[in-house]
Length: 141
Image 1 (tube, helix red, strand yellow):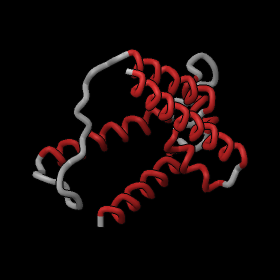
Image 2 (cartoon, one colour):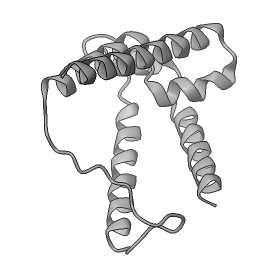
Image 3 (cartoon, helix red, strand yellow):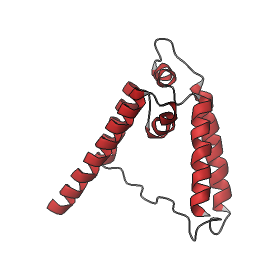
Image 4 (cartoon, one colour):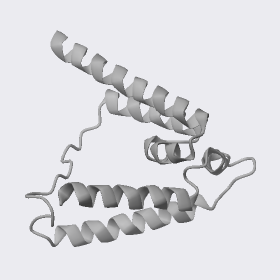
């Protein structure tokens, strides 16, 4: 049941991204273009996402355990370090230049556009390189 609920949640998320226009790089780049042809519509998408998260967090806080698992798996780390800041800057630059972040990029694979496949392949290569670099650094320490 856990796998089924994850699949349903992922499908709903992908559909929401597509309906909101988050899978169209021009919308994202337009949203980030404050001094040009600014597309403010994505503020409503962000507002809806924040409201949904707030409602889910409130509901989850009142539950003793999730419906389809033995415990909640909520991140507990709160530290800010140079790696986090560097990763956030790199993520933001890629998002702003490419107009896609991982979720919308994966959802966009359904369009079968060659550019999207190249973007996702480059994204996967970057993730793989990062993982290998982290493992290498951990062994050295």
